[in-house]
Length: 217
Image 1 (cartoon, rainbow, N blue to C red):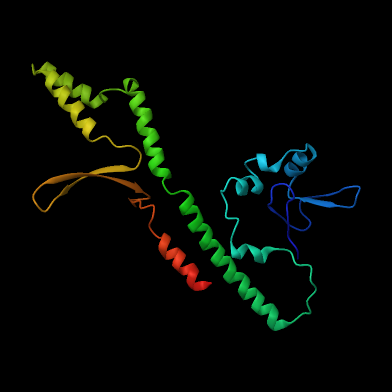
Image 2 (cartoon, rainbow, N blue to C red):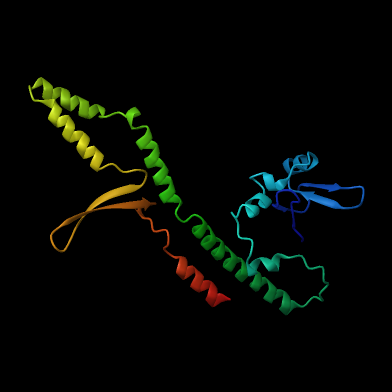
């Protein structure tokens, strides 16, 4: 069973599914759905539409240059049926799929490296530019100041301490501020970026993945 890719978006077009368009010169075009067929008839360029494979490859969002992708090339060479060759081919297909999936994960990690830091930097800039729009105190803090004012306590100093403590403990997104005790008795403040319940390390696992690929090749 041959599964041809869609001529427009690149998705697999399964037999008896999708649309086949035959041109007057005899060339056939396979489309996985009517959306791709309509865009093809409107003469749109698939490299300019973000939901197509051509756009993602052109933008560097997918792995294009790799040895495992060469096995997917079409080979119109007739081969005599051999049971042993057929079994070896099936095992090789499974192993190649595993290697390709692992390499795609490594490619994605390298491509997304530093994204969290850029998002935090843009969030900091946005908050710094529009800090005058943010509320200075929460509702519970305002009620506490009202209770202290009713008791006759000077609330200016208390409000200043609240704002100072909030400014020191401010964190964005998944950041966590921790205080680390040093050996010499000092104190160091550390900002950790967490993701999925733990500390996020962008470079973690890159070398191991590449070493595994070197061994399997």
